[in-house]
Image 1 (cartoon, rainbow, N blue to C red):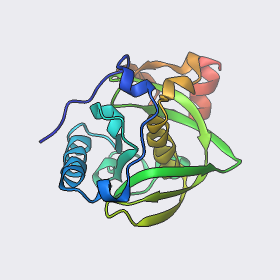
Image 2: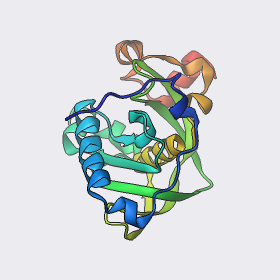
Image 3: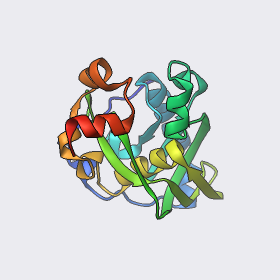
Length: 194
């Protein structure tokens, strides 16, 4: 069953989420929550969903960038974004280290429905966390996957992409698709002027 996704303005999106103990992670309740979050993310559709987005202040997120998400995106755009499929996985209590190099691309959020903006983020990250079985996991990510991890981990700290965006780039998803989707990021940046 897909869960309702809370929208910007809800206090839970601006609070730091609490860590889960290994014992909590293994409970039936958390395992069921993970399944519901997976279903909610896929139904939205999205590539990640953090527990605060469904109203729960827990350091838990699900991530998946499915092959079908990429089918309509031209190959040169996928290469620019460094985007490829990411299998479903769970991150709990993540600790992130950001790489030095920054890249900026448009991103949206299931909790800021209908809008997008350019956000500069680290091109590479390393994340140490627990998985859905409370086992330690080490992730090294690059490109779009690194962006997804940063976005979801921001949610666990009470931050939204709105806090990091280039304000002049903020627009509706409809207008991004209508006017800008076919342009490179550099072309959009030059045209809008940020």
